[in-house]
Length: 254
Ligand code: SF4
Image 1 (cartoon, protein in one colour):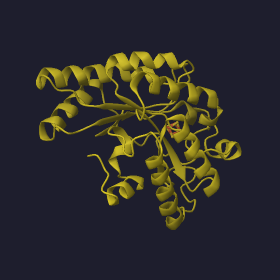
Image 2 (cartoon, helix red, strand yellow):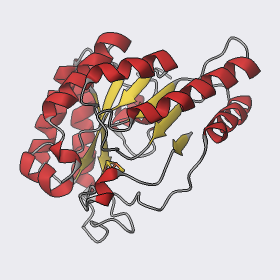
Image 3 (tube, helix red, strand yellow):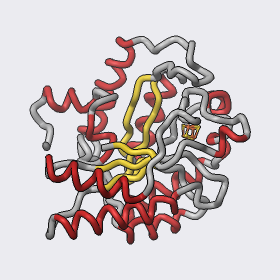
Image 4 (cartoon, protein in one colour):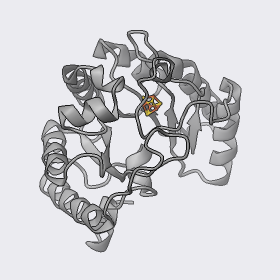
């Protein structure tokens, strides 16, 4: 289940939105009870669900993280009330807050994992592709990733990386850097989304995408990280393929 809490992001208001993003005004918004109702209905049909929540950024120091707290709390309360003894794993997708300790309040609300997405690695490319989000210091990403790993364990934070907007080598080096930090990369091919500034940009080469996912799969196997995280976007496999190489090896956990 993937849900959106709103249809705005502070970067759109400044014209600094990520160039691949078509989020503004294009999503139906939901209220808190909608999320808990959907979670209960979904769990009733399949008690193996996980939930990923995402939203745009805010210009406040928490960068929008705190908006998840009442939603996650109500989802967890509703699941416990309707299905005693059960909890649905919840992942939150967010930018790093200025102070990583803000994330503690999300742990308390019952968030099990995070996706804190770096998008692309080269600084010039970041300025062009994510002009607003790219101003968040890399040190704040590192602090947030480390804070999640220290508190929730290895493999509980992932980072989505778009393939096709940076060079192959920059991307590969960056993926290895993330793995070395204990962050599980999730490589997604760039897709020209209607309404995005990059809506007419060329799609990446699918052979190169295949190759980098294969290299990522090998690096994950050699690392201390689990090959497949059990929560959130990285475990879905709907828009990445590195997990398929693990499947081919017969080593997938689920
Ligand atoms: S941070 Fe970037 S990708 Fe996310 S909603 Fe804002 S503009 Fe879109």
